[in-house]
Length: 138
Image 1 (cartoon, one colour):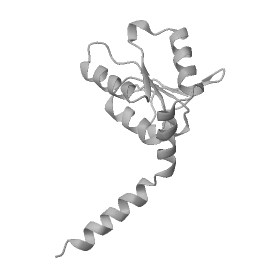
Image 2 (cartoon, helix red, strand yellow):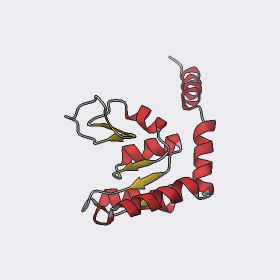
Image 3 (cartoon, helix red, strand yellow):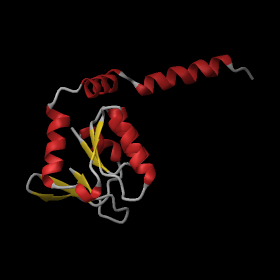
Image 4 (cartoon, one colour):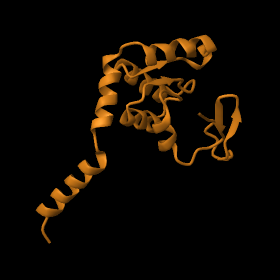
């Protein structure tokens, strides 16, 4: 699946071979959840969602956006992603990075996925909220 990330794009999917393309995805979480690998710009929100879901990433920062390069470098240093500068993106680069991330043993990605599977964020949040509510009086 591919989202072009165009806020004015159609949310109706277009199918070409085995690729489904969306102009815009309202529920990005569902798309990320269904993915094995995320190929994205290096914005904070997408990176954090992918980490929370235990998804490895190929990040292509927007040129001259230093915050995106910083985000991408931090996630790469953590072992959860690979960075490909926009000027170096090629089919070969994407395929090689995909193979490394999906088919090579990577303990960090395995631990990330296991943590995402083992974590029930809703239950944890509810427990903390109830705890805070019980200790704060009127």
